[in-house]
Length: 413
Image (tube, rainbow, N blue to C red):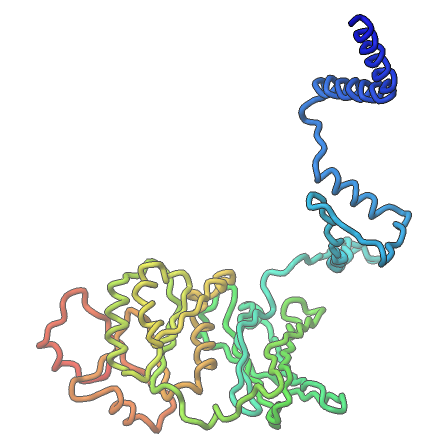
């Protein structure tokens, strides 16, 4: 029995001795793992190693100066799901060039003492009190005529003699040649002298021959010259691109075809706190008066508030009303919210769209006696190109039916 126990001990020692190298490796590994676990307990929690860190490393490696070794097509390439390739570089557009440097101010002139002892005083101008021309619109009136609408300095037109030159520049033809044609622009001041800082100017450009009638397109240039009106030592001229026609855009049939509407209303500038109920009555009355082939152009100068818009929206949806926002004209001090500019623009914009055009305010009503209609009256004046309607102020009291026989004229009430 003792011999057997002695034999087992020797066998165990032999096994341990034979496995001594493996045990050393195992013990060393355990010691290293325990050391790492102990050190990690003292590492701050904000320190971490994530896939974003690996991606950053890959990005830096891909952008390094030394190119990576080429991949062989015979070698399979695999990517881990936790690592993604860096996004392709985004092309950054070159910075826009700086704005052009404004011209230097004119050299200042100093007072001088002349040889005869007289002191010659100097005057140095700076800035400008009003614009030479403020363009709103330009429209064709025929194959060879145009109308340009805008504002200009009122003192310039009252005390000076500004001039206008019209130039038609066609688009390049097949041979690349350009044949421009010029004519004198005839100005019209339609605001009856009511202008303020600015007055309304309509420039008529009528060329001796048709321009752009072949559908080649072109542009209308307006040369506005002060002719020494602001400074007699200078004739300042501004070249203004008033109208551009693309090729094949000019439709000459509009000058001879039947108009779309029988009657078209060009409204004055709407401003202030208007009454929605009055606007509702006015619209319903005149739509019924003018009939289904009528149209109303409403110009909002700040008076179309939400209540007015609720009244007009159904008429817009039915195709009876076109709304135009003209509030930007308030920048320029003209008479009555630049009313004459607005109605002249409407006249030339829609002149070929209607048989008759009406110009009056939303506090005025066109009245036709019961035995007449608006059509019968207009047929009676068909030989005229325009007419005026007698105006009568409305009483602040209710209108009495017995007063009707006293008025036999067509009036605006």
